[in-house]
Amino acid sequence: MIKKIAVIGSGTMGNGIAHTFALSGFNVALVDINKEALNRAIHTITANLDRQLKKGTIDERLKTETLNNITTFTDVETAVSNADLIVEAATENREIKLNLFKQLSEFCRETTILASNTSSISITQIAAVTKKPGNVIGMHFMNPVPLMKLVEVIRGYATTDEVTNVIMELSKQLNKVPVEVNDYPGFVANRILMPMINEAVYTLYEGVAGVEEIDTVMKLGMAHPMGPLQLADFIGLDVCLAILNVLYNGFGNQKYAPCPLLVNMVAAGNTGVKSGSGFYKYTPGSKDLAIADKFSRK
Picture 1: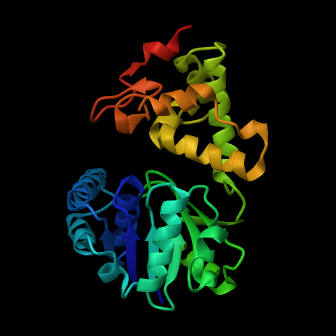
Picture 2: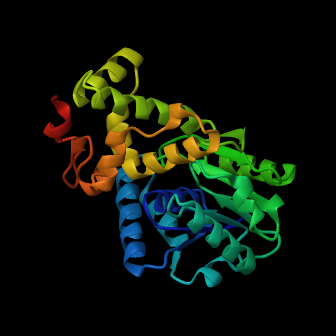
Protein backbone atom coordinates (compact mmCIF):
# COMPACT_ATOMS: atom_id res chain seq x y z
CA MET A 1 0.00 0.00 0.00
CA ILE A 2 1.27 3.45 -0.90
CA LYS A 3 1.47 5.77 2.11
CA LYS A 4 4.76 7.65 1.95
CA ILE A 5 5.65 9.73 -1.10
CA ALA A 6 8.93 11.41 -1.96
CA VAL A 7 8.81 14.15 -4.60
CA ILE A 8 12.15 15.06 -6.16
CA GLY A 9 12.27 18.68 -7.29
CA SER A 10 10.37 21.60 -5.78
CA GLY A 11 9.73 23.68 -8.90
CA THR A 12 6.35 24.32 -10.52
CA MET A 13 5.55 20.66 -11.15
CA GLY A 14 7.21 19.33 -8.00
CA ASN A 15 5.40 21.62 -5.59
CA GLY A 16 2.12 20.98 -7.42
CA ILE A 17 2.58 17.21 -7.12
CA ALA A 18 3.50 17.53 -3.43
CA HIS A 19 0.43 19.73 -2.87
CA THR A 20 -1.85 17.19 -4.55
CA PHE A 21 -0.57 14.16 -2.64
CA ALA A 22 -0.57 16.00 0.70
CA LEU A 23 -4.11 17.28 0.13
CA SER A 24 -5.20 13.66 -0.35
CA GLY A 25 -3.73 12.67 3.00
CA PHE A 26 -0.36 11.20 1.98
CA ASN A 27 2.86 11.89 3.87
CA VAL A 28 5.12 13.76 1.45
CA ALA A 29 8.87 14.31 1.54
CA LEU A 30 9.61 17.24 -0.78
CA VAL A 31 13.24 17.16 -1.89
CA ASP A 32 15.48 19.80 -3.41
CA ILE A 33 19.21 20.50 -3.09
CA ASN A 34 18.40 24.19 -2.60
CA LYS A 35 16.84 25.20 0.73
CA GLU A 36 15.64 28.50 -0.71
CA ALA A 37 13.84 26.65 -3.48
CA LEU A 38 12.07 24.55 -0.84
CA ASN A 39 11.03 27.67 1.04
CA ARG A 40 9.60 29.13 -2.18
CA ALA A 41 7.78 25.87 -2.83
CA ILE A 42 6.10 25.89 0.58
CA HIS A 43 5.16 29.54 0.06
CA THR A 44 3.61 28.64 -3.32
CA ILE A 45 1.73 25.66 -1.88
CA THR A 46 0.40 27.84 0.96
CA ALA A 47 -0.74 30.52 -1.49
CA ASN A 48 -2.47 27.92 -3.67
CA LEU A 49 -4.19 26.40 -0.64
CA ASP A 50 -5.36 29.89 0.31
CA ARG A 51 -6.93 30.21 -3.14
CA GLN A 52 -8.73 26.91 -2.62
CA LEU A 53 -9.83 28.11 0.80
CA LYS A 54 -11.20 31.33 -0.66
CA LYS A 55 -13.11 29.36 -3.31
CA GLY A 56 -14.58 27.12 -0.62
CA THR A 57 -13.11 23.88 -2.01
CA ILE A 58 -11.21 23.25 1.24
CA ASP A 59 -11.55 24.45 4.82
CA GLU A 60 -8.96 25.77 7.28
CA ARG A 61 -8.54 22.36 8.89
CA LEU A 62 -7.71 20.69 5.58
CA LYS A 63 -5.28 23.46 4.70
CA THR A 64 -3.42 22.94 7.98
CA GLU A 65 -3.41 19.14 7.58
CA THR A 66 -2.09 19.44 4.02
CA LEU A 67 0.84 21.62 5.08
CA ASN A 68 1.55 19.33 8.02
CA ASN A 69 1.73 16.37 5.62
CA ILE A 70 4.74 17.92 3.83
CA THR A 71 8.29 17.71 5.15
CA THR A 72 11.17 19.29 3.23
CA PHE A 73 14.59 17.71 2.71
CA THR A 74 17.84 18.70 1.06
CA ASP A 75 19.35 15.22 1.51
CA VAL A 76 17.97 12.84 -1.11
CA GLU A 77 19.03 9.59 0.58
CA THR A 78 17.31 10.44 3.86
CA ALA A 79 14.16 11.60 2.11
CA VAL A 80 13.64 8.49 -0.03
CA SER A 81 14.84 5.75 2.33
CA ASN A 82 11.33 4.87 3.55
CA ALA A 83 9.29 6.01 0.55
CA ASP A 84 6.71 3.70 -1.02
CA LEU A 85 6.66 5.86 -4.15
CA ILE A 86 9.19 8.35 -5.49
CA VAL A 87 7.96 10.88 -8.05
CA GLU A 88 10.75 12.66 -9.91
CA ALA A 89 9.96 16.17 -11.15
CA ALA A 90 13.44 17.44 -12.01
CA THR A 91 14.61 19.31 -15.10
CA GLU A 92 13.51 17.86 -18.45
CA ASN A 93 17.01 16.68 -19.29
CA ARG A 94 17.79 13.08 -20.20
CA GLU A 95 21.23 12.84 -18.56
CA ILE A 96 20.05 14.49 -15.34
CA LYS A 97 17.15 12.06 -15.08
CA LEU A 98 19.28 8.99 -15.82
CA ASN A 99 21.85 9.95 -13.19
CA LEU A 100 19.13 10.72 -10.67
CA PHE A 101 17.27 7.44 -11.17
CA LYS A 102 20.48 5.46 -10.90
CA GLN A 103 21.08 7.19 -7.57
CA LEU A 104 17.50 6.75 -6.36
CA SER A 105 17.67 3.04 -7.15
CA GLU A 106 20.64 2.75 -4.78
CA PHE A 107 18.95 4.70 -1.97
CA CYS A 108 15.38 3.34 -1.96
CA ARG A 109 13.89 0.04 -0.83
CA GLU A 110 13.57 -2.85 -3.26
CA THR A 111 9.77 -2.52 -3.31
CA THR A 112 9.69 1.24 -3.94
CA ILE A 113 8.00 2.37 -7.15
CA LEU A 114 10.02 4.94 -9.10
CA ALA A 115 7.90 7.32 -11.19
CA SER A 116 9.00 10.11 -13.50
CA ASN A 117 6.93 13.16 -14.31
CA THR A 118 8.83 13.47 -17.59
CA SER A 119 6.80 14.87 -20.45
CA SER A 120 8.79 13.16 -23.21
CA ILE A 121 11.90 11.23 -22.11
CA SER A 122 11.85 7.44 -22.49
CA ILE A 123 10.70 5.55 -19.40
CA THR A 124 12.41 2.45 -20.81
CA GLN A 125 15.77 4.26 -20.91
CA ILE A 126 15.26 5.63 -17.40
CA ALA A 127 14.32 2.18 -16.07
CA ALA A 128 17.39 0.56 -17.65
CA VAL A 129 19.76 2.36 -15.25
CA THR A 130 17.89 1.15 -12.13
CA LYS A 131 18.13 -2.10 -10.18
CA LYS A 132 14.46 -3.00 -10.80
CA PRO A 133 13.24 -1.74 -14.19
CA GLY A 134 9.86 -3.34 -13.59
CA ASN A 135 9.22 -0.84 -10.78
CA VAL A 136 9.75 2.21 -13.00
CA ILE A 137 6.84 4.04 -14.61
CA GLY A 138 5.86 7.43 -15.99
CA MET A 139 3.41 9.55 -14.02
CA HIS A 140 2.97 12.64 -16.18
CA PHE A 141 0.88 15.26 -14.38
CA MET A 142 -0.47 18.33 -16.14
CA ASN A 143 0.16 21.91 -15.01
CA PRO A 144 -1.28 23.29 -12.73
CA VAL A 145 -1.25 19.93 -10.97
CA PRO A 146 -3.86 20.63 -8.26
CA LEU A 147 -6.43 21.64 -10.90
CA MET A 148 -5.76 19.48 -13.96
CA LYS A 149 -7.48 16.08 -13.96
CA LEU A 150 -5.27 14.10 -16.33
CA VAL A 151 -2.40 11.84 -15.34
CA GLU A 152 -0.66 10.22 -18.30
CA VAL A 153 0.58 6.85 -16.98
CA ILE A 154 3.44 5.62 -19.16
CA ARG A 155 4.48 1.97 -19.22
CA GLY A 156 8.11 1.34 -20.02
CA TYR A 157 9.20 -1.83 -21.79
CA ALA A 158 9.80 -3.59 -18.44
CA THR A 159 7.09 -1.97 -16.30
CA THR A 160 5.03 -4.67 -14.60
CA ASP A 161 1.26 -4.99 -14.66
CA GLU A 162 1.25 -4.79 -10.86
CA VAL A 163 3.08 -1.46 -10.79
CA THR A 164 0.87 -0.07 -13.56
CA ASN A 165 -2.30 -1.06 -11.69
CA VAL A 166 -1.03 0.48 -8.46
CA ILE A 167 -0.32 3.81 -10.16
CA MET A 168 -3.64 3.81 -12.02
CA GLU A 169 -5.54 3.28 -8.75
CA LEU A 170 -3.37 5.76 -6.87
CA SER A 171 -4.11 8.43 -9.47
CA LYS A 172 -7.82 7.89 -8.90
CA GLN A 173 -7.27 8.37 -5.16
CA LEU A 174 -5.88 11.79 -6.03
CA ASN A 175 -9.18 12.55 -7.81
CA LYS A 176 -7.39 12.40 -11.16
CA VAL A 177 -8.24 10.57 -14.36
CA PRO A 178 -5.35 8.26 -15.33
CA VAL A 179 -4.81 7.23 -18.95
CA GLU A 180 -2.42 4.35 -19.67
CA VAL A 181 -0.11 4.84 -22.66
CA ASN A 182 2.97 3.11 -24.04
CA ASP A 183 6.52 4.43 -24.08
CA TYR A 184 7.18 6.20 -27.38
CA PRO A 185 8.61 9.72 -27.86
CA GLY A 186 6.25 12.37 -26.53
CA PHE A 187 3.79 9.69 -25.35
CA VAL A 188 0.31 10.95 -26.35
CA ALA A 189 -0.06 14.42 -24.85
CA ASN A 190 3.09 16.01 -26.21
CA ARG A 191 3.24 14.01 -29.43
CA ILE A 192 0.02 15.80 -30.39
CA LEU A 193 0.43 19.11 -28.54
CA MET A 194 4.01 20.06 -29.42
CA PRO A 195 3.65 19.87 -33.22
CA MET A 196 0.62 22.17 -32.89
CA ILE A 197 2.60 24.67 -30.81
CA ASN A 198 5.54 24.42 -33.22
CA GLU A 199 3.24 25.04 -36.20
CA ALA A 200 1.81 28.10 -34.42
CA VAL A 201 5.38 29.41 -33.99
CA TYR A 202 6.05 28.75 -37.69
CA THR A 203 2.84 30.61 -38.57
CA LEU A 204 4.18 33.62 -36.67
CA TYR A 205 7.72 33.19 -38.05
CA GLU A 206 6.46 33.17 -41.64
CA GLY A 207 4.36 36.29 -41.11
CA VAL A 208 0.96 34.70 -41.64
CA ALA A 209 -0.45 36.46 -38.56
CA GLY A 210 0.57 38.04 -35.26
CA VAL A 211 0.67 36.53 -31.78
CA GLU A 212 -2.76 37.70 -30.67
CA GLU A 213 -4.37 36.80 -33.99
CA ILE A 214 -3.01 33.24 -33.95
CA ASP A 215 -4.14 32.66 -30.37
CA THR A 216 -7.55 34.21 -31.01
CA VAL A 217 -8.19 31.90 -33.98
CA MET A 218 -7.46 28.84 -31.85
CA LYS A 219 -9.43 30.06 -28.82
CA LEU A 220 -12.55 31.20 -30.65
CA GLY A 221 -12.40 28.88 -33.65
CA MET A 222 -11.30 25.66 -31.93
CA ALA A 223 -12.67 26.30 -28.41
CA HIS A 224 -9.21 26.06 -26.84
CA PRO A 225 -9.14 27.73 -23.41
CA MET A 226 -5.71 29.19 -24.20
CA GLY A 227 -4.02 29.91 -27.52
CA PRO A 228 -0.97 27.81 -28.47
CA LEU A 229 1.54 30.66 -28.13
CA GLN A 230 0.26 31.67 -24.72
CA LEU A 231 0.25 28.01 -23.72
CA ALA A 232 3.86 27.69 -24.88
CA ASP A 233 4.78 30.64 -22.64
CA PHE A 234 2.98 28.96 -19.75
CA ILE A 235 4.75 25.62 -20.31
CA GLY A 236 8.12 27.30 -20.87
CA LEU A 237 9.63 27.75 -24.33
CA ASP A 238 12.75 25.92 -23.21
CA VAL A 239 10.62 22.94 -22.19
CA CYS A 240 8.77 23.03 -25.52
CA LEU A 241 12.10 23.09 -27.36
CA ALA A 242 13.45 20.17 -25.31
CA ILE A 243 10.35 18.07 -26.05
CA LEU A 244 10.45 18.87 -29.75
CA ASN A 245 14.10 17.80 -29.83
CA VAL A 246 13.15 14.48 -28.19
CA LEU A 247 10.44 13.97 -30.83
CA TYR A 248 12.76 14.96 -33.68
CA ASN A 249 15.58 12.73 -32.48
CA GLY A 250 13.21 9.88 -31.64
CA PHE A 251 11.33 9.77 -34.94
CA GLY A 252 13.81 11.43 -37.30
CA ASN A 253 10.91 13.17 -39.00
CA GLN A 254 11.26 16.77 -40.22
CA LYS A 255 7.75 17.61 -39.05
CA TYR A 256 9.08 17.65 -35.47
CA ALA A 257 12.01 20.00 -36.21
CA PRO A 258 11.77 23.05 -33.89
CA CYS A 259 11.01 26.37 -35.58
CA PRO A 260 14.12 28.62 -35.80
CA LEU A 261 12.19 31.40 -34.01
CA LEU A 262 11.60 29.12 -31.02
CA VAL A 263 15.29 28.15 -30.97
CA ASN A 264 16.37 31.80 -31.05
CA MET A 265 13.94 32.89 -28.35
CA VAL A 266 15.21 30.20 -25.98
CA ALA A 267 18.82 31.11 -26.80
CA ALA A 268 17.99 34.73 -25.94
CA GLY A 269 16.52 33.71 -22.59
CA ASN A 270 12.92 34.57 -23.52
CA THR A 271 11.37 31.40 -22.14
CA GLY A 272 7.87 32.63 -21.30
CA VAL A 273 6.15 33.35 -18.02
CA LYS A 274 9.09 32.30 -15.84
CA SER A 275 11.45 34.74 -17.56
CA GLY A 276 8.92 37.56 -17.86
CA SER A 277 9.00 37.51 -21.65
CA GLY A 278 8.09 35.07 -24.38
CA PHE A 279 5.44 35.56 -27.03
CA TYR A 280 3.83 37.82 -24.41
CA LYS A 281 5.33 40.06 -21.73
CA TYR A 282 4.64 39.32 -18.07
CA THR A 283 5.01 40.92 -14.68
CA PRO A 284 4.71 39.03 -11.38
CA GLY A 285 1.12 38.20 -10.54
CA SER A 286 -0.26 39.01 -13.99
CA LYS A 287 -0.87 37.24 -17.28
CA ASP A 288 -0.29 38.47 -20.85
CA LEU A 289 -0.14 42.14 -19.83
CA ALA A 290 1.09 43.14 -23.25
CA ILE A 291 1.73 41.32 -26.48
CA ALA A 292 5.42 41.42 -27.32
CA ASP A 293 5.66 44.02 -30.10
CA LYS A 294 8.75 42.31 -31.48
CA PHE A 295 6.70 39.31 -32.58
CA SER A 296 3.18 40.70 -33.02
CA ARG A 297 3.93 42.72 -36.15
CA LYS A 298 5.85 41.96 -39.32
